Each structure stands twice: as structure tokens, then as C-alpha cells.
Image (cartoon, rainbow, N blue to C red; front, side, top):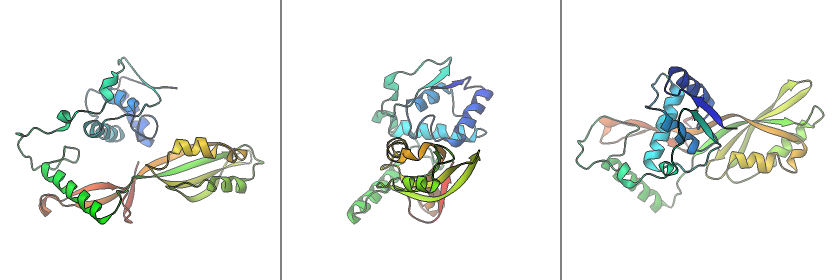
Length: 262
């Protein structure tokens, strides 16, 4: 069923969008899609900082459009009073759209969401060359997921249910802590943490093709995603000298100073 929004440029519409994005990274699914482009195009301007979740989402989609484009199909979204965008609007932007004008004045202000300067591009190329020379592979992003696994009834053996869950093994998937949570009428559900490498594991595939398919579905009736968070690391990076120190999120970093983005 398609998600429906209306009056997105009004206070009530923005409030609804902000609440909707409180527990979501994208409009539908777990990657940017045409649904995100539709909502982005329906907004006349970026949401103000008052709408924290909507503003965070808008700037993220805006950056994707400028850098790499969005190709995900999505599940369908409707914005009342707004015509669907053309297919070509979703394509990857041309280099002319993303290239900064050559004669534009250099601005010393730090803009975390702005385009890269020539110095930053050169520094990125040098880091990539150094990594290639050292034989290291680029780190992929990771996500932390809290999953509710529900049994068929109160007679389901929850110990065997958890064994069935943890028996699912694949590259990039790590199972974490778990606990049983009462639901009602003597029924309990399994709540379990897991960490996935985004490029290797799809949560949809994990649930549909493994957890709710044979043989695990002998014990598992359904699965619900309670929380889905990207894992970031907050590190300082120096650009143009110490006086221009900035902090950025490094995706997939292995250091211990980890935070999650909700």
C-alpha cells in the first residue's frame, strides 16, 4: 500500500513528514528510491531546523542527487495535489550539474553539505591512492538492526526458535544479544540485535528468504524491524590547516568511538 502525504509545504504536512521519518532513513525501504525523489520534488524548499528528521532526510537526498543520483524503485508514494515526476528526473545527474563554476569566488566558510573544493578532491585522491598502495579494501557501511521475531503460538519452543534464527549465517551478518519479551496470553517474542554490512546483506532478503522460509518458518511466524540505524564514527579531519578543522561522519570505521544515527 502506497504511503500518502498531503500539504507538504504546510506546517501540518511538514510535521507529519517529520514524525514519519523519526524511525526511518528513507521514505520506503532501506535505500534511497523514486519515493524519496517524489517527496523531495514536492517540497518547495528544505525543511527548517525545527523539523529535525525531515531536514536531515532532505539534505541527504539532495546530496545523493548531486553526487550519484538515485536508482531504487521504491514501494510507491502519493502526494495529493502533486503530479508524479518524470522518469528522466530520477536519472544520475550530468557532470555539468555537479561541477562548480571555475570562476566562482573561493569561500572559506565550512559547508558540510556543500560541494567539494579542488583541495578536498585532491586530498581524497591521495588517500585513495595510499589505500590502494597498501592493499587495503574500502570499508563498507554498516547498520545495526533490532528485530522482533514472533512465534506461531504459545506452544512454540522459543529455544528452538532462537536456534533457528542464529542458524542463519552469511558473510556480513553478525547476531548479537537477545531476550524474550512477553506479548500476551502466554505468548513471548524474541527480540534480537544484529549488525550487517550494507553491501553484503539485505534485511529484506534475510527476513523473506531465510527467517520466514523453510526450515525456520516451522517456529517463526513473522519478523518486524523495531529499529534500523546506520553506524557512523565521529572523527576529526583537518582541511586547509588546523584552523579549518572540521568533523565528519566516517562510514564503516572500525574504531571504538561509535554512534548511531536515528
